[in-house]
Image (cartoon, rainbow over all chains, first blue to last red; front, side):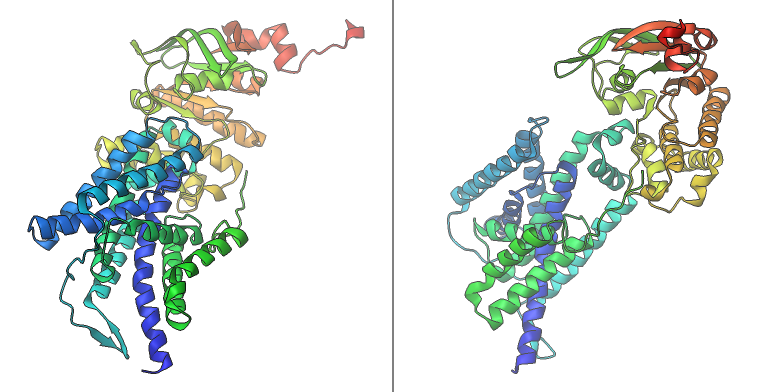
Length: 294
Length: 247
């Protein structure tokens, strides 16, 4: 195996984890756009996705597809409940207070998960076998293709929803101007609830598709959540292609850094990118300056 | 049709509306005139439940609406064209109009009817048709105003609340906008409550008017009487101003 094959290997596996970060990042962006808060509990829904699937599949012996379906459903319900109990009662609270509440929420969810499932690390079975596939000298697992495929579906569905359905358009309108949205009859509270539900579902889906590769435990949400946050920051908190690109950039750089420099620096790389973006281009890499006509 | 009884609205400690009472009859165009900060916009926002009143009553078509939320008010048939247009700039012109019909989509009204109403808006404002795929933020000020009115019309309101539709527009456009307001009344019987700094234009189309000063109604007359009223002329129409030494 020469260096170019190595690099291809790093890039491909980087794209695969990057796709996960992208999906988690979209969840951050959706909530940020509808409430202007950063939901730091987002990572816990990623964890819940993996752990719940494991619970339904391994403990309750349900089939894998059905377990996945139930896990997404339960995680979505938890997300909606979280909004109802912790976010919605605080009308007109300062976003900073709400952000701190989401941090509290994440600690709570993680704590409950630890009580339920202990501190062990679990493996979710691959979706379709573990026979590696060799591609131009790089090896990929079938699970990597599941990740690419499902991520692509999520991105397309996300785009269709926000640009072609009336509810999606209403959510974009809400993120631009809440008062004007309520004046055309949009119930702003419902869109906030809905955005929490969607982003929990996205987080759970991401957690499920990556669990067979990286294993899962009660605390995987912290790192995955922060990487997703990093993706969303690079994308300028856009609910679209910027965040997807952000996720892929973080994933690839992290994988290259781990492979070429040292695997000990893997996480550091993501956070160096995050800090650089926050210092140098806090509006995101792809956001052009706004010109406005009045 | 709309009847407001003794409402008081506060912004924090600021007493913005003081015992305001007014009414709008079916098919009537009523103007609210007054200086900046007199409470004109607050009245519209109080009706739309954006800034709910702390006490007093608002009745629309016989039922109380002062405890409802903004989306329910729209459902009842009151739409507002807010001050400064407040269109959804990152969305296309077409999307803005569709969002105006948001509640109709949600109540599963036939797409065909909504589509027809969209065409009607394009007939009223042909400029919007040419720009239907453009982002609303790229429109000129006049076009944005047309879009804001079109968006409100998509909800098929029985009462239209218009906040400063003439602000910042060239005189030709102002005429165009007011032509449409009159047309709406004569064709659809839409009632209009109109807030305007430009009192002359407003009183030309209106049937009746209220003059507001620091949160209070100080005068209620028919539009022609207000136009002829010496105090109104001096304060709001810029006529007949006399310096102290001339009196």
